[in-house]
Image 1 (cartoon, one colour):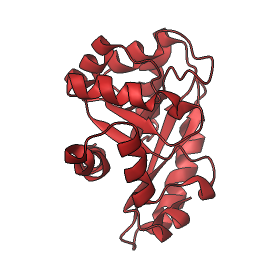
Image 2 (cartoon, rainbow, N blue to C red):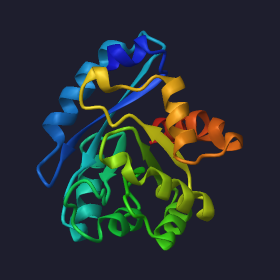
Image 3 (cartoon, rainbow, N blue to C red):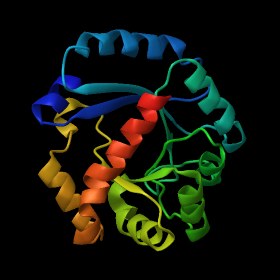
Length: 199
């Protein structure tokens, strides 16, 4: 994945395997070991987790455990309409104080978009089939609330990574105005990287 991302001229890529309540340390240790092979490159490998279908009341706990085990970025699998996700997942992720990105949040409520803005949680515009069905809704609600957005390939294999020009088309197709494209494709990822490097 990192090799393919570098070939696509991406500057960084987060590998965030799906986990629930299991101990993430062995996964994160393995990813950090792989990341060390990239230390002499301009490309930055990022190591993290995507908390997936965790009972909402346990999301904050699971996110703290992931951080303590070495996760540089914590993503939560949001309430995508393409899957059965526990109701309340979006709100729990946004309230946890430990989550960086709420992925494919589905029919995001305006008050939750406002909470994302208040708590510095980035909302995903997904390139993945199914999850992308509500991109337009997510963009509209996020823009109204002033929440940050980022285009994410949500790739599960190297050939699913999205080149920059296609990411731009996804953002425009979801309703991101031309005036905000640079922020979504460059500014927000740069802010996330600064946050990760400080932690």
